[in-house]
Image 1 (spheres, rainbow, N blue to C red):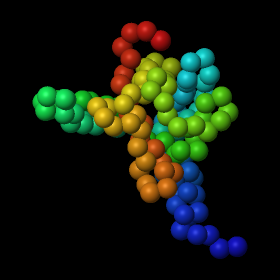
Image 2 (tube, rainbow, N blue to C red):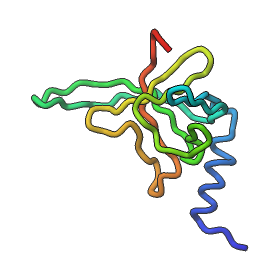
Image 3 (cartoon, rainbow, N blue to C red):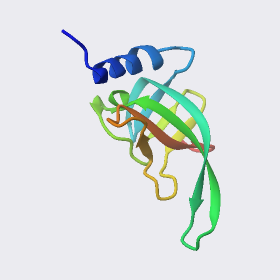
Length: 126
């Protein structure tokens, strides 16, 4: 059986890039009381420009989590990120948020196999 380009890309994303300890870390993903442990994600701090209704620009710093879409599971079901979802590593917690008029996530490829999820770090609280 021959593999398509899309099949090959999915295999590379799940088995090479995202399972490599060199790049990905493991997080607990939660929505309310439901949790999924062992979600592999690559994080990076990025700065986004936001223009308010009066036309003033401001910069927003986000900790983005790049995750394979099929690994974004809540209570055993694959789902899209929702504002308020949380990533945790046992020490720190990041909450999923939209940035300005952007959604709280965006696809990194044409078929939405990898998602970039925008978050902010939670300083106090759970």
